[in-house]
Length: 351
Length: 280
Image 1 (cartoon, rainbow over the protein chains, first blue to last red):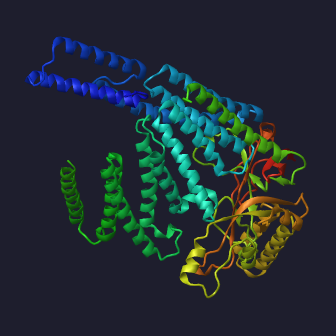
Image 2: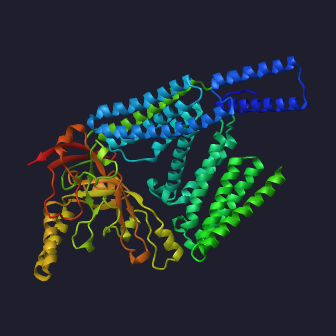
Image 3: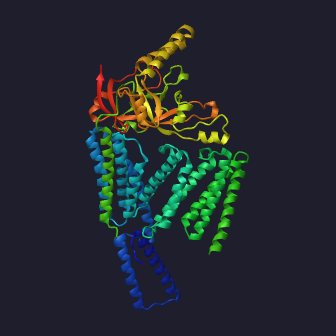
């Protein structure tokens, strides 16, 4: 099986480690006894593979390294967001001190320079932590570049700016295997499709968030992308597409289930709220079922979480005012227990 | 063909360069040749925006266009828009004008569903006509004078004082920039208001009135597409010490410098500051 990405290498490393542990156990129990020559050949083969993976992709070779990696991932995410904010505020603090040509030069060179720096860092580093930092800064610099040009020259705001922002974020995401940049790119795409849907619906593009239904086409498109374009080479990308798509579907649905007046539809608000509540239940249950069928754990989890949120908001509407609080929370707790039992039976049936 | 790091570099750099080029070409086009209109505004029409969370860390300066809409019901008071997105309505934005703008108000026999559909119409992008120091301002000023005069004779002393203060404000401090008309075609609006030193055509938004609460007659001007003008470094000294303006007459005259600034609206109707001088 070809190993093309860090995610593939990490998965292969985990498989080899699990195989080695199982082989040791079988050997101890006397179930499978390999000759010394076979053991040496196997150890040599696995040693070479793990060495290659560690050198090329900087994978975690044991559980302690994995735990440390999680910490590094979190630090890298926080660092990336903070550095992005820092760049934004730095420019804000100094841009007024320069003449217009210098302002433009700083903005363009910052965008170009941070992009090149990201690619150079990626070449030197296999783990991706510093690449993620640099890539987010490059993305922020480009966003700042276009947004500030608009401000310096008083250009009419346009949703078209979202297209190049999305393009650069996706380029960095796919080139450097970075899910954070994928999320940034998808947010731009969601905003663009949402604004275009709003424009078709007769709205001013910047107000597309006022009608949550504007997000539904984006949700559908994002959910279908990993079905049409295979993402095997990019670990977790397909899952990110689906989870973002489901958030883009369920969050607006949740808003409409509580504030039906925000809908495009000219129905009575009460009818709208009930309609979206029913749709929310049905869609989240359907999504959870689809996730089980396809073996998409992230889809199952997202579906279940939103099903519970829809249910609990309904409980709140029905009973918060009229029930004693101990009883309200008891009902919520008992519902959770009921769900656990249902899921246990479901899991047993699947197994 | 396999995607290589070289292709990533070429694609990314080209993307950044191309997008910058497109934006700058657009800017050059807007500012090329004779501007579509040029207004000579003063501290009455331009103000620094109200301070917000990170404003004190912003070294740049943009001046907010203080535009108004005449409201016949307000007894001549100056309703400012752009500072706050709510307020009085534009009496010229009536049913006929809304129809002209492609917004069909519901008939008297409209069903509840039709009224709800209408109420859900959002802001519509249109072209707006801005009038500077023209008949609308003079009409508002005249009305304020009449109200002040009437109140001097009839009303309680406190109210009369307030009217007099309002008149002073209207005469020497308040903005003379009014949104007076809207249309779907910039050329038609320009033909209607040919004086390019008094009338500017800009992009903006109007909002149809709601049928609820009995306020179904006049729409409101919601905002300009660009409601501020960036101040380049060379003009910054002119505006040193300029502070944000309030909506209502203050006890003292507004602090800060008096100035005259030339704001040109280019081929894409986008504004730019082309000159600024201090006034004594």
